[in-house]
Amino acid sequence: MKEIDEGIRAALREAALDSGSVLSLSKRFGVSHSTVIFWENGRTKRIDGDVWREKVLPIIEPYLKKAARGGAKLSTDGMAVYNSRREHASALGGASLYEVPVIGLAQAAGFDPALEPFDAYAKGCGAETAFFATEPKSGYFALKVEGRSMEPDFPEGTLILVAGGEFVENGDIVVARIRESGQVVVKRHSSGGMTLKLESLKPGGSSFEWEKASGRGFLEWMHPVIEAKVDLRARRNIA
Image (cartoon, rainbow, N blue to C red; front, side, top):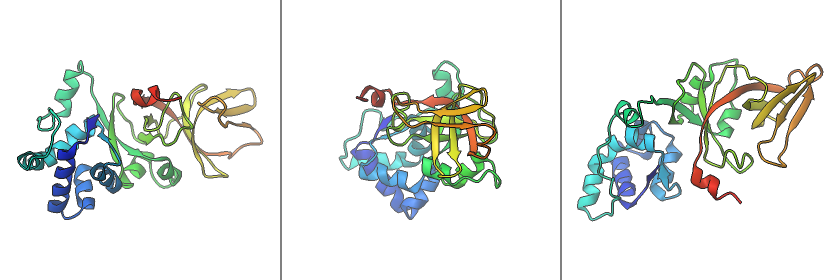
């Protein structure tokens, strides 16, 4: 993660002015409009390391130099020129990293599987992106965990890679949309006999259970989670 210091905020403001608006700058970065606003006003304290290296730094580097000349305080690596994604992956032992669109729970609730694949829908939301070790297939997307209902496994801010379009297996952690309420949940799926369950990841949290025969149509869609990026410091602070 890249700490957002005074120099980066100043560079973001200058880049937004030259781009014509924060919205235009966000499109250049490939992230949401609100994400850039939160970076600039201090509401978000850090930028994902891959997003910083691949998307933000190449655009704002000239503005960082200008901010430094103006006396803004920069972190020690604020002026560093980073390698390409391939070179960065090599430094991590040769592992490849793959870019996937990220959406929130509210955006996931608006998805209609009859209209388009999940990854196309996520890209259409103007979503930010994240990098994962798993090579994505058609339909794959990332979901940002919001709130504390998935602790301690997935604290707020965790990014989970979802295999949109693929079927789940017994014991998988899944993302599912409850048809009646429209709620999108992250639960552990289990199947035994004629009963299906979506069990809470948090002790004492809400779970769902229904009969296979009588509960047909209980879910609108359900897909397995296959990778997660967890902020370990956030997990450490869970009471």
